[in-house]
Image 1 (cartoon, rainbow, N blue to C red):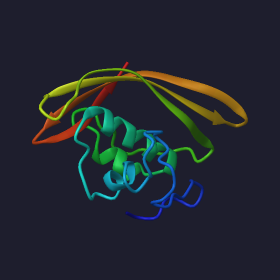
Image 2 (image 1 turned 135 degrees about the vertical axis):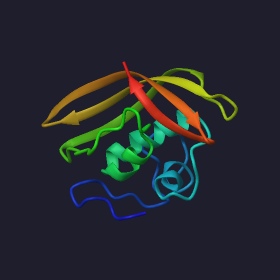
Image 3 (image 1 turned 90 degrees about the vertical axis):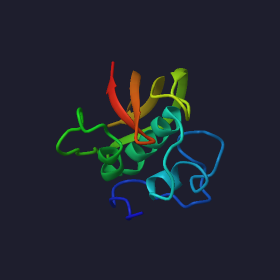
Length: 136
């Protein structure tokens, strides 16, 4: 895994994973960001994408975005600090499903102000790989 941009947090494999799964970064999202494994569920892909936003891994975000909705480039704001992820609900998105939905709330701090992103994300699985499709 390439080093994160200098303005973003650096995580060690033994650090707690930012997605709050209860696992270490190395045992959770770190293995997906490093390309060692593919996320087996839509929720795990969503958690790893949340973590990628937090550590400034735009390459991972673009690689896990479905080609039909993927932007040409992605610029992440190092002033945005992601603080907590709450999973509200999940529909489908398991290892044998073709699509899935994950609703979540992501709490952040930006320029001294706290905020919350509430999103319902849709995912599709093609060729055994989950990809982020869109959000509402």
